[in-house]
Image (cartoon, rainbow, N blue to C red; front, side, top):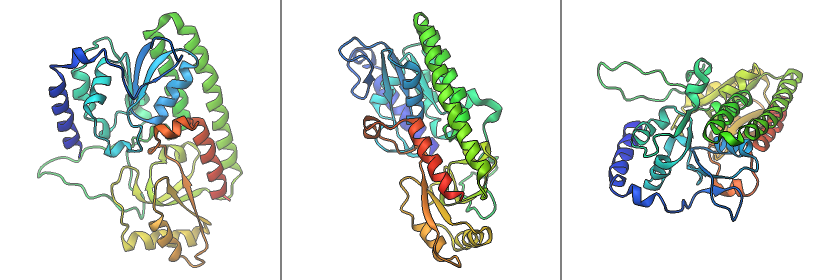
Length: 333
């Protein structure tokens, strides 16, 4: 999959090179501008919703041409860049992306950037040693890998770093510093906005800590993919799941379902978790194989399917993580 995405990006870049400079003056149809009626300020491109919303929070009322590339519900793992996407990246002042395996096509796009003064933030690089390797826990159905003969297995890192409120605090500060570098005249504003936003994130982190500490249950069980390792590790929770967070699998084996159903019984769990967009079939099958068959299905939002409509309807990183806390509270009863 990553080679396909890389090849698509290379072909798009080649097609753009001859006409890119003349196209740069055109308006960016996906851009969201602050300060309606005024000339756009610095150009910022982000890949996913959480990054987009952190930038909005640090900008505050300051003007910018801000774009979220993944704005139609396609998640990071299956996203394919368009020619327009490559053009936006090539000419922006600040580009921010996750930087995991799903983003490997970005390397070629950045090499062909026409703005050589662009500031680039790679979240995984910024987090350094705190980035976690993807893990397969007991009972989890491992994804089948296609490897050539003699090839060494590459370390795969968990890309879902935004699902830690603590990471969000750290990364928001990095965003503030990048904006201060690009737009030094407003440096104090960006730092003040970041400080206020980080205080809100820290308050939410304290709520999560208090809720988990007060809960009798310390284990979550997902009849689904599991992108929440950063969240569970932050608060000392254990987990079981059908698949790893980046898995493309949709059918759980008999062994996986049986193991998870037995864990529900063994731990007396009253909820089986899913992520947004799931059809719940695996969760329902797990419940049907438990002794009591009366568990609830609860859904945590991993923010991998947020759309521009969600943004326009008022969705924010904080509001979604607040909702996730309420779901977690129910799950840990």
